[in-house]
Image (cartoon, rainbow, N blue to C red):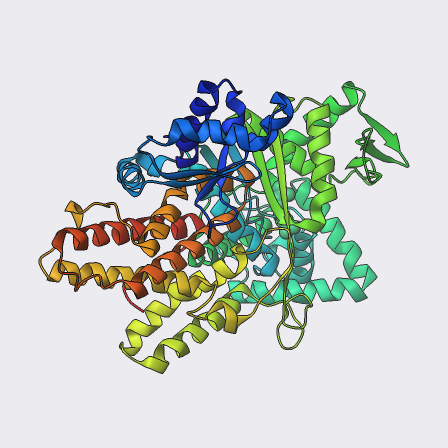
Amino acid sequence: MKKLLEIITEEFEKAFVQKGYDAKLGKVVLSNRPDLCQFQCNGAMAGAKIYHKAPIMIANDVVETLLENDKFASVTAVMPGFININISSSFLADYLNQVEKTDKYGCEGKNETIVIDYGGANVAKPLHIGHLRSAVIGESIKRLKRYIGDQVISDVHLGDWGLQMGLIVTELECRKPELVYFDENYDGPYPKEAPFTLTELEEIYPCASAKAKKDEEFKKKAHEATVKIQNGYAPYTAIWKHIMNVSIPDLKRNYDNLNVSFDLWKGESDAKPYIPGLIQDLIDKGLAYESQGALVVDVAEEGDKKELPPCIIRKSDGAALYATSDLGTIIQRQQDFHPDGYIYLTDKRQELHFTQVFRVAKKANIVDEDTKMDFIGFGTMNGKDGKPFKTRDGGVMRLENLIDQINQAVYDKIMENRTVSEDEARETSKIVGLAALKYGDLSNQPSKDYIFDIDRFTSFEGNTGPYILYTIVRIKSILEKYKAQGGNVSEVKIISTDNESQLQLMLELAQFNGVVEDAAEELAPNRICSYIYDLSNAFNRFYHETKILSEEDEEKKAGYIGLINFTKKILETGIDLLGFEAPERM
Ligand code: ARG
């Protein structure tokens, strides 16, 4: 479906051509002086150079042909040659009524297949804040891409193959040497029951990790155990499976609480079968060579601003690395999906890693030349002191505790007014808390650091998740009252108006499809945040200036209801794209 700006631009292109000028000059944009007009066309300024005429003369020519056009309320040429545009409110109302009936409100994409790699949790380690950002931003980008019609495959890509696994095995052996896994004469079968609970596992890992920092011998053993796991040594593989079985359901539960879900629960370990072939291929193609005992591929290119070190494919001790498993995973994804594009989300400190991986993938033709490879490196979530967010005692904040904190803050706010039962307040605070957390994150550009500020994030006023939800709840309550008066919400539609705040709300609504397409293209959920914030402000202004339910003119009233009903739908779609929802009341 055509965007409002496209329709207006077409009218201007026709007008320029009719007067003998180039159609390209007819581009219309949103006004940067909303106090003067809604849209503007600056083509006459550029035309002046081409046609050696004063811009105002060109502008006057063009305006002349548009005076009778019923899409416009006013089209005015102003010195030195700008054209100020206001569209007619009945044209705008018709457009909105059409948008409302159109699938996805007229948003369209390029029908691409995309693999999105986000989440990235590490098995056996509790989810921490870095994984929170990856999950929250990744989930929103997945939803945006799907909304515009792309085929999106999401993969959590677990860190299930690293040193943490060897550390756990080694610590387990210290604690329970009598277990069959450590008896060299035992050759199975291995117990179905895991030799630890989730709680124990969560304690074993940090303990082992701390030990390895002090105790060289322990660290060496953990390394050896890791290599044994990677080589398929049966007893340790059995422990590895137990770790996976205990840890993954907990990770799933955590992601569920965040309203985040994945199509695939693959991990680094799934890349393993592809690695020998990958290494051989890189050698055969003459890309990989030995350097100080390691196998490396050069990735530097002319025009690089920073020096890019070669990508290490195999260490001197034979171990595969992070880059190797990422390349193996790409081979697998090519076989399974042959996507048009890849999107990866991690902390921005991994930028070098992904640049190297993408370059090797292209050089070795693992992906096609035109495959899009995007890396979104996000900034850090900081505490109020401007340093990475920590617990009070300086530890890594567990995601669950963070969520509990924010929910409690919302609960306290709801109970201040105490219009609902405690149970309802608890339920509502979970919904609103998640919105506060996600919106607080997503409203920033992904690459920027931001400060996690519970008071600000949970405020019902300002640029926050709860403010957006509050607006939706307010509209829901008006619609309920309208129904109680005997009104039928499915029969109303948007009508023309000369009321300023109503017109502004209509103009905001008309931007939706364009904003969503841009946000999906730019991988920028923050665009959706600022849009729904502007839309909420436009609605609230209209609401404060208008007596909606007590309007006596029934047709006018129905028009109001049509407008706010559509506003509700757009806001609800917006928050769904961000990955949260609104309660019935709050
Ligand atoms: N597990 C990694 C980490 O915690 C993130 C994985 C990101 N995805 C990838 N394909 N490398 O840093």
